[in-house]
Image (cartoon, rainbow, N blue to C red; front, side, top):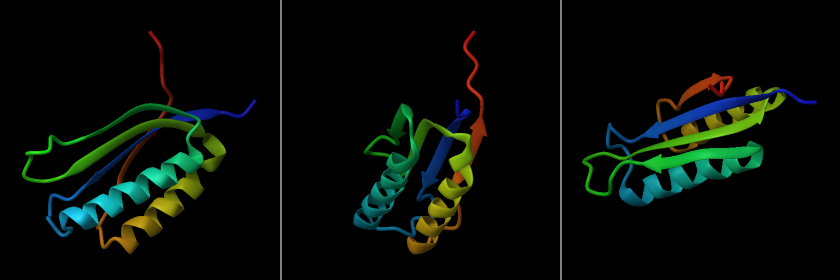
Length: 96
């Protein structure tokens, strides 16, 4: 059985580098990459539409062995969209 881990990916446009249309393409590209790897989706959310800046959050489960490839693809995505970083939190979900 393959080990699974929970991943949280956070993206944002607080520096306002991206236009609304560019933000749409960036967030869509991140979502597409996550679709490739995810085994389960726990949450997808974004800032309120009237917020000054945009941000997005994706919480999902992947196979542990795929983590480095996920990081590599997200790194290429952020570079392609002229972003400085994508935040990622990785861990094991504990049910209590």
